[in-house]
Image (cartoon, rainbow, N blue to C red; front, side, top):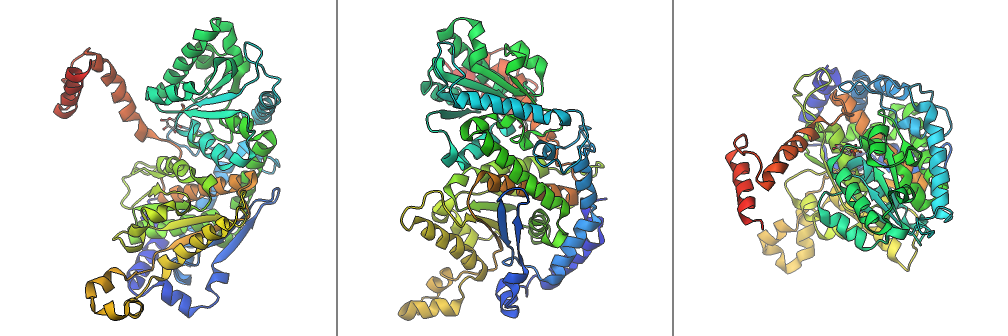
Length: 547
Ligand SMILES: O=P(O)(O)OC[C@H]1O[C@H](O)[C@H](O)[C@@H](O)[C@@H]1O
């Protein structure tokens, strides 16, 4: 059934039409002094110290709207799909696969999941522990007997973004005398710059690719192996400097990486949900296995919360339905993720893939063209930087941009007044966005200049811009795990309501295939006749200008 066929969708449409002009955050707060108490809730981990306090009172919703949004979740059978996902049913229907990233972090064993490979998760984690320990305690030596000082993660998409985001977020937990490099782009510059900082005698290359067929990763890994062999000469030394994280044993071994240097995962781990799998090896080396385990445990805590908490207290569900309210009824095109913690500076980038690759779909699971909006455009930046760049548009532009503000009570780096100043901004922005500044106040402030109408108008803030505030105690591994899993499940709920398959990514294929057919043409081989005059013209321009 398309999302619009649910009775609550129609109800929400009516509620939107009848309330859109009168419903304001100013009036909602004026009417109810207890609004904050009512529309805020806290998640606390069962197995870890992970916590997330969610204040969603600054959303343009009243009781009726919230009730209907939660009914929509019920009518769309989201809970059933959630249980099917947890149980290992093949809910990725187009690829006929289970979706079991929750099995990778089922640290308590509370979730009962049956699927080929699930029974091997612990053994792979054990392998990761033993390997990451040996790099960190320097018992693993390179071909000349030196310990590893540089780790280069070669991967792209989910095989890059998760490891990058988490190692950045947990930087204060990193063992300092190993340098971490991430090479993803096919642009040779990316690899060249990383190699400049590396010495073949003490560098470990981690080739991360679920399929082990991704053009960028295989090309980059081949370049790295050539660079290494220029010094090491003997191919036998590759074993000490290259490991692979993949589901494709055959391709890994034919690349020349021995099976014992391969860390396995399974086709039921989606690329953008893979940091919890062997793809997390770089994270485990960087922050130590115990911290990696805490990351998994924090995510597991949210998995249990998503499974067990009633809908009205269920954080992923609340974030999802509020997003749907703006995306599908207010016509908001984008959603900003704004973490006020420098360590989370890659968080929004990470969820660009997490959200947009999951829910950027226009065909429902039964093959119908949707007649409503699906996944939003995700963007954002950390800290106050955005305030000096794009917040102008959020405050006074013509577009509605719902925002999530994420901030920790405690910083890892208590220096002078920095943290309080940071938090004062994280609190001030949602307040300003919600309540704005009216003309009368502007005039009063302007005094003699108030007669300048244009000036007055340009200083008015319309307000009524919705935000969520997510407060955590500190960016610890467990809390980070919980935050990531929270957004994963938010995306799940939205995809379920929209009746799309959030777990395939067919839309990335066409461009890849075309690039392969264009490649020989850039050496003058093959005709450009099948291409448009534009692309053929650009190829000819390139050919006539390249030396
Ligand atoms: O891990 P790999 O198989 O190399 O895939 C890397 C990435 O490439 C693909 O294009 C997909 O869109 C991503 O979901 C995936 O994470």
